Length: 101
Image (cartoon, rainbow, N blue to C red; front, side):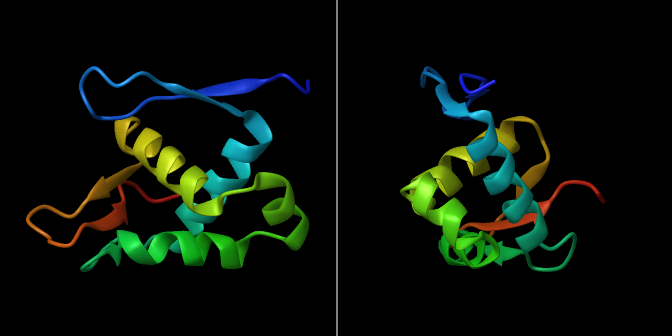
């Protein structure tokens, strides 16, 4: 199913969702969930794109294009699904998994 897409929502009110090819969504989602801790102080959001890139194969990175854009888009969608969460009161933004995988 080459045209299979995931609709990625954002927690920003009024912001339109983005449609991403399922394979792109799934590989970035898996890398994000692998990179994020389940507890503690969380991971700085600004570190996430580099960690995701390090977890992807060379072929995935080449076919994906902008790892940073996809990381941000999938991260926002995972927040709306409550799979990941921002650490309350943390500045700059820090992230944790919302549940144990």
